[in-house]
Image (cartoon, rainbow, N blue to C red; front, side):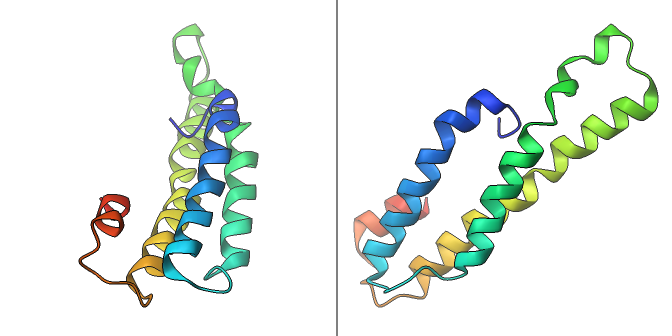
Length: 108
């Protein structure tokens, strides 16, 4: 899901919206790990533009090329995880009522 360039056109605004929601709910003046979030977004975009080849396995890619595209497709999950766990850290370590249903809706 996160490896297709056309998906990034749809998902990048969502990432920004979620970051702003986490900021407003946590009532924090700035995002925790701002540069980590920034570099994670940049690496998602860069890796996402190079994973198209995992759709081409049936056309006769050699083993080295197939391993490269498979590896990049799996590695793109790392910056995505950085973003998600940073959002959770921002929400769970804030001064927000932990029984607020909106918080648990976002966490789930």
